[in-house]
Image: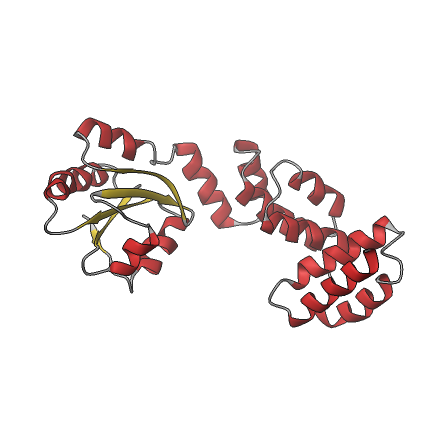
Length: 234
């Protein structure tokens, strides 16, 4: 059974849902003949997945914001979303066997389902078991690393993070491992002290950058401290 999604419900029904279940977004309109052809095929094939893949139908005449989001130029346009991102898609009408393969590629394997269940449990034994199943899974690595930081195991955290490409969240976890558990109010004093040595001391410069990473872009102090670092270095 397909979900009828609107501009207002897209966040919850598609983006949020795709964080744990793949979602196929079918962009259509009542006047589109090919849309009426592939619509029932998409419903039939996704229903056959037994809930492992969800179909979301969007009437772009009534929900123009979603059409603009996908930069739609022609329909039918079909996009597969997982983890809040578009991972595949096609434009136009295709035969059923092609659509079946499109959907089949999104169905998680039994191992992937097991890993997801272990991540949901979230304790150290479960995460280490998940890591054995998928040694390069960023979700597993980040979750386990965050637990190890609480135990003060910075070296193991950094070794774990080295298994996956750097991303915004791995940078933050690595920074937390190197800096340690510090109260936010203490950052001003630390940054001021470190600023005197960042030019010639690699460790001081790394710690300064790590603290800025932990503060995040939302901290109003971060921009000013970044400017001070640039002025000091250059």
